[in-house]
Amino acid sequence: MTILAETTQQTHQTKRTAPLRLWIGIALVAVAWICAWFGPDRTREIAFIPLWLGYTLTVDGIVFIRQGSSLLSRSRREFVLLFLVSAPLWWVFELANIRLDNWQYIHPYHFSWLHSHLFATIAFSTVLPAVLETSDLISTTRIRGWGMHWIRWSPSRHGLMVISAAGALLFAGSLIFSGLLFPFVWIGLFFAFDPINRLRGFPSVNRRVANGDWSLVIVFAIAGLICGFFWEMWNFYSMPKWVYSVPYSSRPHIFEMPLLGYGGYFPFVLELYAAYHLIRSFLLGRVPSRLLVDRDLLDTDPKEPS
Image (cartoon, rainbow, N blue to C red):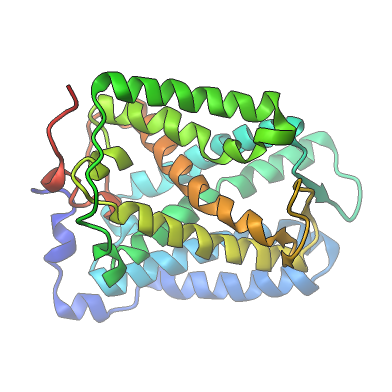
């Protein structure tokens, strides 16, 4: 297999070299964190963007040190693609929240519609890179080997189509019956998109689970909690910031997020992964994924569903 083969062919010396982007990332995080919490209003307004760009560059740099390569060194195109796909993906959830009203934004002063949506779009572009870079980092640890020989679950083609339809209905139901089914907004699209990716022969969680490999599920669960913690921590003293009004789980809180709400970060990462590969398949076709979480996919891929 040739996908990401260079990740195992780097020299020991290369692995020990800290790339420049690591130091740039650390500097961005340090400065933007201070500005987000303690800076003047105009500085705090934009601090989220360099803060999460810095986080992403820092994590990419750590992956490079540990693995000998990283997403940015392997494929700048895919690294940039994560940012381009991220913003419209998060806008889907912002549109869903018009119905759900589970979170609201607090601003220090009035923003024009154009100003607000332009800066929001740039900020939203950092979500997917942060999550998948964090997943790549976890993939360089022993955690990546957890759950690789569990229960096999390989639905037939008909079963996958039924799951996909059910996922779409779950997502729609979360909007129609928002008071009761609102949690399914964070998992419905995964069940809708992941089977489609499997049926079309693109990376999917089900492709691994069909072979008894649940390691990707564990990696994404941990990545979701890590990113969720930093999102909520950095948001707590920031301005603008977001607050929550989630039914049935108003207390206790960790930062602004109700404790039970952190459970939503795990399926959210699954949705991002499935949606990214669906969109990527139309943009890049059969070009192999350069993510570490996909590095040995073809080696473990079972037969296509019948």
